[in-house]
Length: 125
Image (spheres, rainbow, N blue to C red):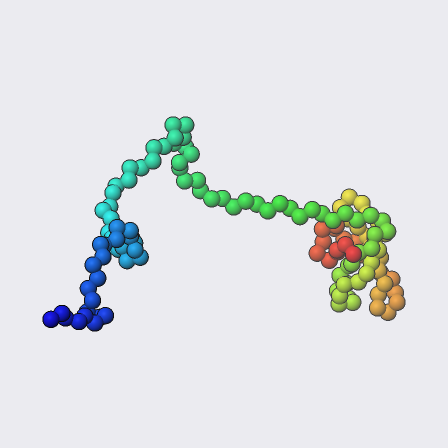
C-alpha cells in the first residue's frame, strides 16, 4: 500500500547552494573582527621639530578704515546737534585732513562747520 504525500509533507531534496544569500552577508558583516595594532605612519624625513610645535594664537590687528576723500563741491551729510539730525551739506574747503561744509538750517539760514575728514559727524553723500 502506497502512502499518499500531501504538499506540506513533501520533502525537498536539493543540494545547499554555495552562493551567499542575504542572511550570509548580514552574518559576515556582523561578525567581530580581531583588533590589530596599526603601526604609526613614518614621519617625512624633511620635517623638523619646529614645525610640530604648537604655535600660540595672537590677535591680528584690524586694518584701519580708509579715510574718506572729500573735494570742494562734493555733497555730503553732516550731523547737526542743534537741528537734531543729519543735514545735506556741500564741501566748501578741503585741506590737510579737515573739511569745511556748508548746510542750510531748518529755519532757512545757512551754517558752516569744520570737521576732521574721519569724524563720525561727517559722511559721504
